[in-house]
Length: 359
Image 1 (cartoon, one colour):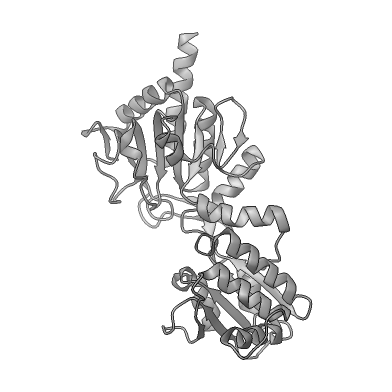
Image 2 (cartoon, rainbow, N blue to C red):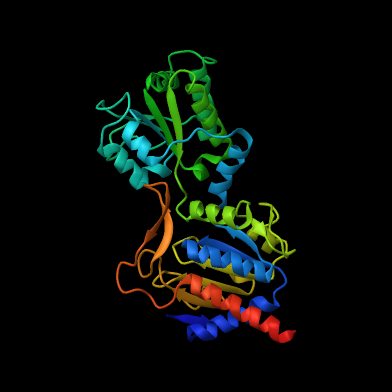
C-alpha cells in the first residue's frame, strides 16, 4: 500500500508511526469525513476516545436535516421494499433521487401487494427533471424553493388553498392514491422542507395511506448514525475532549473549529469517495483514503495512507440503499493488504503504548 509523510513516499508502518506521534501531541484533534465501512467507523470512534477528538462527518447536513425533524415531530416512513411492492403513486422531490438505483427499481415494476396490486404505477416529480429515461409527470418548483413548494402543496392537500393550479392537481393525485410514497434526499430538501414533507404525509394519512422514504446520503451517513447510536447513544457530531461523549453539532463542526483556531490536528477518513475538506491543508493532518482515488497522493495531507476500498479491494459492512439496512460487501478481486480499520487500530495501539511508556 502507498503511504506518504510530508510529501515523501514511505511505507505504511512509518506513516502509522508518524500519525501516532502527531495525534499523541495534539490537544484538540478533529476526525472528519467518516466515509468508510462499519469496521473503520468503529475504529475511528475508538481512536477519537483515546485522543480526545471530535467527530464531524461529511454526511452531517443530510443526517441533521432528518434528525432534527424526527426528534421534534416523529416520522411516518416506509422501506424501499415496501415502496416497490405496494406503491401505486410515487412523488420524487428534488433532483438528487433521480440518480439513485431505487428509482430504477420503482420504474421497472408494478405494485404486486396490497390494494394497488397489478395497477399501473404513477411517478410524479416535484422540482426534478421535466424529461428523462423514467416516464413521469413533472411539476415546477415555486420561486421560494423546495420547502416553500412543499408547504404550498400541503396547503392544497389540506384544503387551506383552492383554485385550479398545478399544485391543486398534484394534491388531488396524492389524495387519490391507494399507497403513496414521497421520495427525497434530506440534504437537498433541508430541515424545513423535511418537516413540511412529514406534515404532508401525516395529513394524507387522514384519508389514505401515504409514507415518506428519505434516501441515504452517498457518504455512508446511515451506517455512521447506527455506529454512533450503539457506541455513544448519541448522533454522530460528538466530542471526546472531556473523555465522555458529548453531542453538539455546532461545537463539533470541523470547519468552524479550524476557522476559530480551536483544532490543532485533523484526521480525514475517506476509504470511500467523499469531498475533501477545503481546510484540511491548513493544519497538521492525516488522510486515510481509498487506494486508486484522486486523493491517494502525497500532497493530500501531511501524512497520507492509502487503504483498500470497501466492496472493491476489501470486504466491509456498508449501508445498502436498496435494502435499507447494513449488509456485508465482499472484495471484488484480490483483497487489499491494508484496511482503514486496521490502520486506525494500529495508530490507537501505538498511542496507547506511548502513554504506557510515559507512565
